Figure 1 (cartoon, helix red, strand yellow):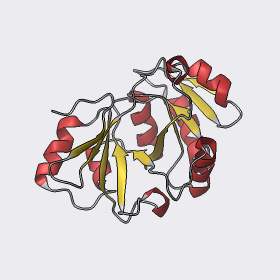
Figure 2: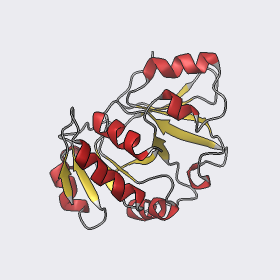
Figure 3: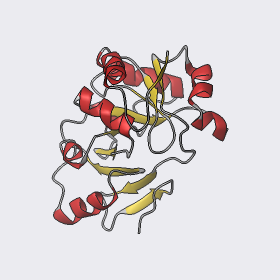
Figure 4: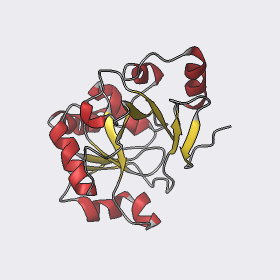
Length: 202
């Protein structure tokens, strides 16, 4: 189902409909501050595995990340954050970044790497934040499995044409970005850029 939600002033009723789907283990495609993402509640392992099948990746080997609604929410899913690291994260969040951090016990095993780390995003996107606040816990964040066709990556109607039978909702929040997030490894000092994307790190 394609559901249109205003990118700046998300309709509360429509957000509740999407969140109810996530609570039941549904899968959604949604806008972020980078490319459109495909995701589910991190509390539904079956849904995470469904997404891995759609992307044709092994859930045990995939480096999956998830979205939090703010820095304090993020800190629940990581081991103690030092003051310098907190200042570093605060400088860039919310924004188009994925930060690799040491995972706390709240992170489901399926989302942790062998090194017990996890990738976490706090997107600068009103629809994402509204969904996260209503849901009350993170949602999986991975880019939609499409080739380098930038028009499909950014156009929700074209995305819906491709994925309508594989997901429960495609949230139309307008045209998206064509760049993925910048990935920064914060388990080393100083933090190291693993992938350069939409976000600049000074």
